[in-house]
Amino acid sequence: MSSTESTGRTADKSPRQQVDRLLVGLRWRRLEEPLGFIKVLQWLFAIFAFGACGSYSGETGAMVRCNNEAKDVSSIIVAFGYPFRLHRIQYEMPLCDEESTSKTMHLMGDFSAPAEFFVTLGIFSFFYTMAALVLYLRFHNLYTENKRFPLVDFCVTVSFTFFWLVAAAAWGKGLTDVKGATRPSSLTAAMSVCHGEEAVCSGGATPSMGLANISVLFGFINFFLWAGNCWFVFKETPWHGQGQGQGQDQAQGPSQESAAEQGAVEKQ
Image 1 (cartoon, rainbow, N blue to C red):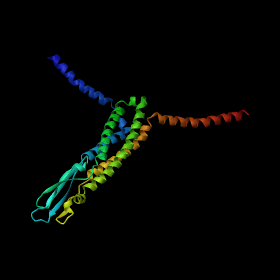
Image 2: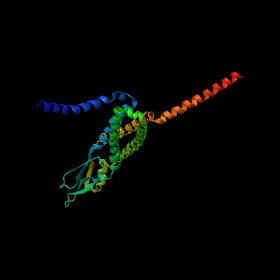
Image 3: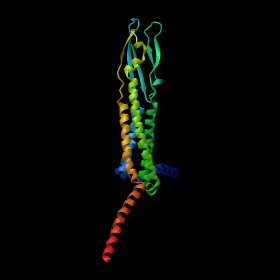
């Protein structure tokens, strides 16, 4: 019994010991450095960006009142959200004639491309910054000794900077189009029953776009974070050291030449 209990205890301790070793090996003080601190901000704001955009949902609507006394006031409520394929969202338009009751309509527009690109970029940024933080905190010696890691990190950082600028601008334009397509006035303008004298149409409540607006703001914040981090990552690359070395050589060259000239004058 004692042997089985001892083996069970050692089996229970081994995963804990591995976790403890992993946590002990992390250099948390590197988070106080600009390179580590900005990566934490990139990780957080990537979550905020794709979370705010991917979780958005809203409603738009209108009221249709037929002049025919046989028909009551009809309320139309249309729910929409990510990925903003509005042309697939159906709603029932009431008809004021006595033969038919309603007609199936669709919202106009497909704005899934900028929204999905924005969310996908946020997810990729989340995973890359998490992997970069593990490498920077746990295997920092490998990061500094192997010059390929800083070069790869710099190239990826520049790429993400460009992609965040494109994604934030594209999603900002797409969100403006979504607002125009989901306004209650656009809904009533698309319904043929509202163009005649047989019905009176009025717009419902304007959909709340606060969360979607914040996602665009988070997109531009991510752009500025990645753009600012380019300099700190560049300082870790060999290119930064080569530039400093060339500057020192150029500074030492004239001083040596001037010393040689002074020696020649003294000899004369």
